[in-house]
Length: 192
Image (cartoon, rainbow, N blue to C red; front, side, top):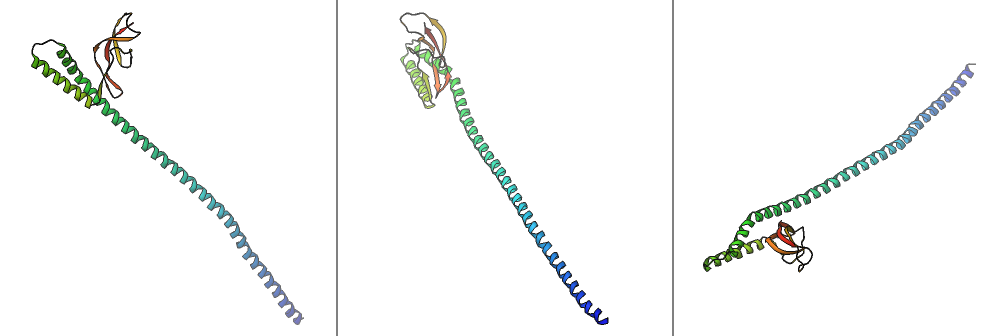
């Protein structure tokens, strides 16, 4: 029997070794399965991260483009305001000098016997007109023209069969434009 026990022992040990080997193989396979799962989940996590980063990149790019467009609009608006301000100041300054023009015009219409005085007023008026022209100020031509409320201010109305409908027959005060902007409306008498 001792011999039987000795023979049983190596067989039992062999079976135990086989079981241990199987257990080790299973243990080795489990981490591989877990690694595969982790790789799958890791890929998903990486894909999620990439998607999140792409989304963040798109949002930041959109924000940048909006900011750039907003700055460009601000720059244009500032330039327009600057140009408009310059034109408004220029028109305001010209408006302040127009009473001088009116007085020179009255002085030319007044009769005088002193030719030197008359010649001096004519020269001043010519210089004043040249200065207005250099500034881009032009007189509004209106005698014989159709009445235009955008450029004329009708202060009198007369019925005259010889004149056309809304025709300007007399100018009381000359009007002026600075480019397309009316600096002063012409005061006129309108027929019919």
